[in-house]
Amino acid sequence: MPSDDGQILRNLQSHPMTAADFRRIALSLEGVEEYSHAGLPAFRVGGRKFASLASQAGGYGNLMLTLEQQAAFVEEAPEIFLPIPGGWGKMGHTHIRLAASEDVLTGALRTAWKLRIDKNAKTSRKKRRRGGVTDKKRGKRRL
Image 1 (cartoon, rainbow, N blue to C red):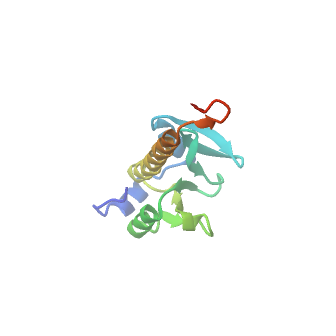
Image 2 (cartoon, rainbow, N blue to C red):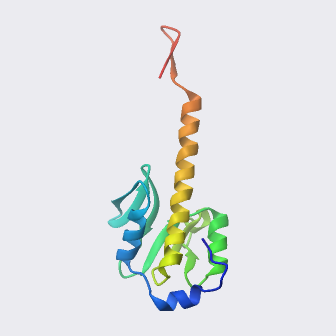
Image 3 (cartoon, rainbow, N blue to C red):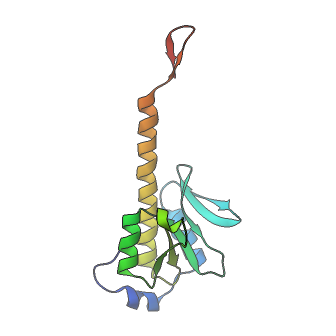
């Protein structure tokens, strides 16, 4: 989450993160698994992606956020967060510079993870509400 204490720049300079740190932090979150998406490491929970690493030379991770979350992160630390160019960025997909501090990186990954957990729960509730399909021959509902 964005910081209220204004320490981001000092943290940025103190101990920059790497792709290995991004991976370690993402995999420390409950239920997360790593897979390859377009040949790059990506992270999902409940079968749905919430973060990925950009090309190793790029020095960026990618987060799937809401537009409101994206705006808050970018406003708080434009030197660390930026919308991914094009349509993806207009849907909340956000770059995070791996030069961020561990606290900032952890908070941002946790935010994207929590958003995905919440979306997964809403999808599950919708499926349960729809119930099964009616078997027209027997006039019974199948689950």
